[in-house]
Length: 270
Ligand code: SAM
Image (cartoon, rainbow, N blue to C red):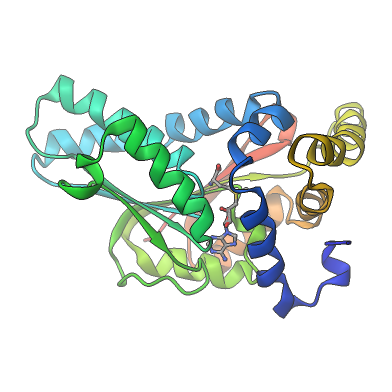
């Protein structure tokens, strides 16, 4: 099967994406480590680094009792959300506020990814966080039509998800809608490598090695072929800034990680 976008009509893309992530859900975390050589951990750490830690501690110090509401869209098995929970737990201890300083909602279109994520969360944090304090929740939903009210989150994150959304601009407009005024949008996504030598190494690796790993480890070459192709077809750094501005975000900017293999885009809702 060939999952390249050129052969897939737009209205079929959503179904394909669903299929791909359904079939990779169980092996997703192991495959991430294998394919990126563990780099995805560093990229996700970086997202948290430049984002929320500062604003989280500010919010907690300035408004005790006020909760920072975070929405992690295409949150999959919870990697990004768990980092926020870890950071908040550390801060809570040092600030010794009695309340949960944040709430994190993981939203994903795929119930299989959410199932794996919720199971990991219960093992890692215990069930109180989900069942009692409800500081962490898992919600099925589509980035293009989010089931949340306008102006309801302080921070919207999407990691390795935006390129899978069928109508990216609609996804960005939804992000804008659900953020509070002053809220921050952050996207971690594969982007374009400009250095020709790094680009050649990266292309060879992703077109030749990744589908092989997919085949031998997850017994699923087409899904991993799709992942590689979807990366190549997605907007580059500047194009995504432009699309964010078109959706209404201000101060839109990006920073490259690992030579532009991935980029973190940020913008604010005025
Ligand atoms: N953010 C997680 C991470 O970094 O490990 C998961 C990333 S995974 C590559 C992409 C995720 O996007 C999958 O879990 C998939 O189900 C989800 N997804 C794809 N299209 C979506 C959409 N339209 N709305 C919400 N989630 C979507």
